[in-house]
Structures are given as C-alpha cells and as structure tokens.
Image (tube, rainbow, N blue to C red; front, side, top):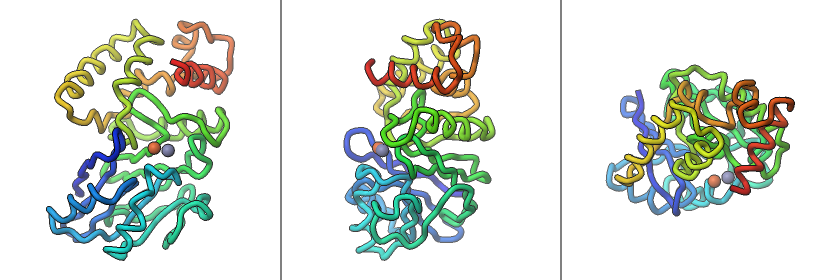
Length: 254
Ligand code: ZN
Ligand code: FE
C-alpha cells in the first residue's frame, strides 16, 4: 500500500508524490515545477527515487532537471517523446509493465492531447494517473492527435474497473461541471456529484481523485456512444467518434 500525496503547482496543476514506506521508495508523477516538490520532500525527509512524465508539456516536466540534479532520480517517460523530454533513463510505451514506487504499473498509451501521452494504471492500488487525458467531468484538449484517437484513448480508460480512483493532471473540475450540467441538465447523478464538487471547491480542497465507475454515467466525453445521451443532445445520427468530436468542440468554445 502506498500513499499518494497531492501537491498543487502553478494555478491548477496537480503533482503526485507516491510514497512506498515499506520499500522506502518515493516517486513523483508530472513535476511541472520543482519547488513545491522539494518543499514536500524536505518536510518529510524523503529522497526522490523516480520521476515519471505522462507527456511532454512543460507544466508536467518543468521540474525534471532540477529534481534530477538534486536527487539523481531515474526519469521514466514516453518513448514517443524521446526528442521532447531530456535525460530519460527508462522509456515506456503501450502495455509495458513497470514499477512505480515499487508497485506494478501498466502503461496505457492514450494519444490525443499529445501523440505520446501515457496514463499509468496501478491495478493493486486501484488507481489511475490520467495526466491530461481524462479529467473529472472532462477530458484534455485534443492538440496533437485526431478526435478519433482521443475517443479511442478514453475508451481504453473507461474499460478499467469501476472502483478505479482517477488522479488527473489539473483541477479543472468546476469549469468541467458547468459544461457537463449545461449539456446534460437532467442527469440526477451529475447533480449529486456537482453538489459535492462545489462543497470541496468552496473549502479549497482538491476534487481529486474521482471514481471511474461513477464517471461513466456523468462525464459527457465518456458517453459519446450512449444512444440515449447522444439523442438527448441532438447527435443521435452520428457515429461515436463524431459525437465525441462535436462535444469536444462545443466545450472548446464554451
Ligand atoms: Zn498537457
Ligand atoms: Fe497540463
């Protein structure tokens, strides 16, 4: 059993510091900046063994070099981003089984937001680090891949067990909630989720993690192949990837 420590960075990024006490291993996922991570490590007296990046964007890798310099940590990053992330020790790609914080982890390639994006699934811990692919009530913007690629990537994540807790790269939940309730105003489960989200936001505590099983019924981006839903928003005659694309573009302009 590991502990997952949530560190805030920039205005809305989350950095995850994983600690395996029994094996004495500490790992960080997506250190966009080094300072808050250093502060946390110093307070706890932990050495940073590994850094893992989900994708090449600077708000996820910006702290790599400073942390490597101080701790000589191993850097684990997507093979696809070979030319965009420096000083990588271990490259990862789809379906690789690796260890993060001493725990078995499956690498899931989820192109769309970027072409090399990977998510990390720790089956025994029942948790998923989804980077900028899946957000609470939302999904990442499609910058490099096609809309269809992003949709297929989200389906891979949706297939994971319901009890999976999802830790995503940003606190975008409130803005995603506004869009979700706009597009799906009659969804009672969504209303209940949003109430809890507002309570947390008011208290300035993270809305993360969220449960994948519940998300399947309330995140509009995971429901582009659900006929009742797509009919209700007037997209019934489109194939799922097209529905997804239309919903994604609507959110981009929301
Ligand atoms: Zn990103
Ligand atoms: Fe990001």
